[in-house]
Image 1 (tube, helix red, strand yellow):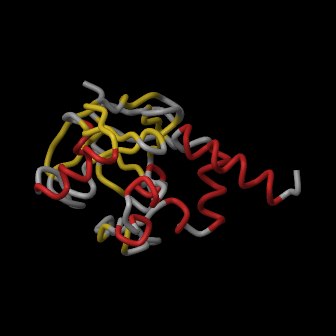
Image 2: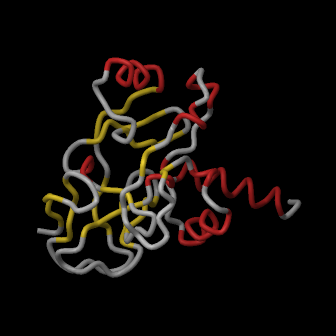
Length: 176
C-alpha cells in the first residue's frame, strides 16, 4: 500500500509512506465535497470543521477533505507539494515509514471581499512541525518570504489558482 494513516509526532494522525516514493510521483489526489465560501463560513461558525480542515482549490471554492486526505499534516520543510488543482506530488524521494507532509501555506490565498471579513489576518494555525526552519505559525501564501514563494513557484508545487497569481506577480515585477 502506497500510504498508511497512523499516529503522528506532528499532530494527531498523519499519512505515512507504505513504500518508497520517488521524487515527482503522484502520492494522492485530494478528494472531498466542494463548498463555497458562504457555506464554509457557516460550517466554521457552527463548529462543524476546524480552520485547517478545508483545502482551497480556487479563489472561492474549497474542498472538505475526505479521509485519508484530511490526515496529511503540515510541515515548513515538506517532502510533498500540491500540483495542479489537487494532486499531492513527492518533492523529493520519500522513504517507507516516513510521514508525508505538505506546506498548508501553499494552498491558501483568498480574497477578503469573498469572506466579508479580514480572513488574511484571521487565517492562522499554530505550527507543530518541528522542522529546523519552522515558522511557528501557518499563514496564507502571501505571508511566506518571497524566496520561499519563488522556490515553490519554480518547482511548480502550487495549486493552479496560486500559480496563476504568481505568474501575474512575477510579470509585474519584470515590467511585462
